[in-house]
Length: 334
Image (cartoon, rainbow, N blue to C red):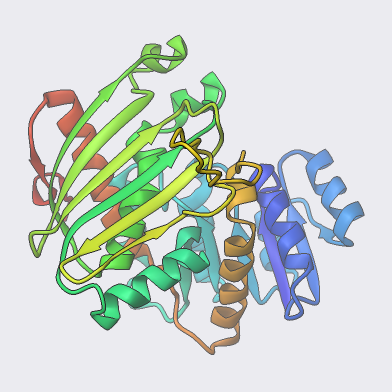
């Protein structure tokens, strides 16, 4: 098949490399406002370069991958749907939840599949955790712990436009908690602090946060996030049930150092970047998209899924600012 890529920044170029290695993908068509980025992709992957999204959609593509700036997501999703072309779009659907709701309303009832990029759904550990929960082998759940710790904060300009740590970083934890447990979040309580880079505080954001999520069956989920984890990129999940407990991310590249006598685990080189930690997950995610394009599977992460994670992020942001518990229904826009 022939896949178009809109946006060739860090993640777009990474997707171009991944797609170029998939057997199902015969050719790539790319576009980016910066001609140098498009030219580099053409040289590396033999991609065809066009000068606009309109030209890309007219180039006979079977599916498109939207990796452009967040502000452009709604228009590009809608353009793909109008053209009848299946869409893969990196999260979020839109810069604000109200815009995301408008996108959902605009595409509802259209027979064009849309997949939103939440790559943890394709990581082998999380896939196995979901299977363990769904099989009942853990028994009834009581506690989930989910962690995302970045090795260093992104640039100040990125932080200022990110929408805050809950919408930018924690939202991955929120999505994967929903996906693994099969439950919905009903209420949150969030706290945050600033012990590191001054520009994060100046942007009105926190660099380290914690959130308690209450799920609709009474399970408690604890989410921990930070922009500062000098040892590396740390993504883990623990799931505790009345019959068993399991963990995702306990492997030799875990960026954590044990001080127990005689313990050598973890013994590998720590993960230092999300692309390192989730290389295979991204490949599985885009392989899934080729199956969506081929019509052999439904979207594995819909706009509705992405918006549910977004409501949790909004609730946590409000909770942090107002120092109180917040229900999801309080922030949900109908």
